[in-house]
Length: 378
Image (cartoon, rainbow, N blue to C red; front, side):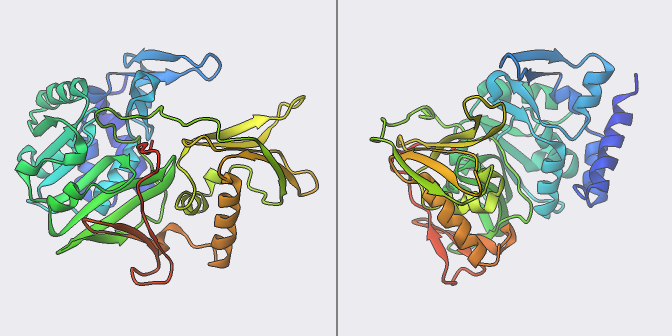
């Protein structure tokens, strides 16, 4: 079997070829960090049975998977994962980390990302926090086998690590519905934050922020990226309201088979509609083709939209008109010239966070408000 060093070097070359690594320092970090130490086993979901199966990294096939640009689940039910190495290195590159920088990582996970940071900066410059005690303890043990002893803490990542501030860089490897003000406060002025903002289920993107004297501001990443939602104590993930009233019927000509795959439109819709609890495709009775859309919200609202017949779709909905939010978002997006993520930005102050198009002072601005049912975004 090939050595892990050969496999790590191949992974680094693959990421460099894809533009996920741009500098020699991060390429060296990937080449010299044994990912299998942090992912000695992983879960895979069987799509037929719906069950998670456990795989130890003991054979060539498993080692090759660990040293590929693949996210791997390390806790059953998809509760924690080792993110795609290419996403990690792209974020680390984009943070423009320099020698001597102190970095706060929100979401320790397996510890692999912390190991890359330790290789680049030295472990004294790295702090990391995670709510999962088991993950933090294992990450600490695995980092120690490589001679790294960064400051690791078990706790609610939303609070950051105030006793260790200020930081030059903050990187969050979990998604949040709003940028916690504590992260901004703990970043020095002109320091950088890179956060996965998801105001609803898969609705949002990575946003690059620069600390200003009164907050933070920046633009969303040109490319889409996503992490699991940050867990907090007492996280009410499964809370969903009642039936939201009777069904209503109408028609629609919007031909988006998977509206969530147009990530900008999905985000624009999420800025106005109730927080989505789930979505997907299903087959109509007598068919095996998954071409009917279902969207459900935490307040009990729901829509079911059939496949188009001669350009017309049947919409069945109750509660808030979810499909109308998606239709309006698509119409608005087209009218704006189909903007990409890079035209959107975010301004963060202690009392308000505002999404904007093109400029913080432009006409199109959307203040982020707390969801009415108080559910944390997944």
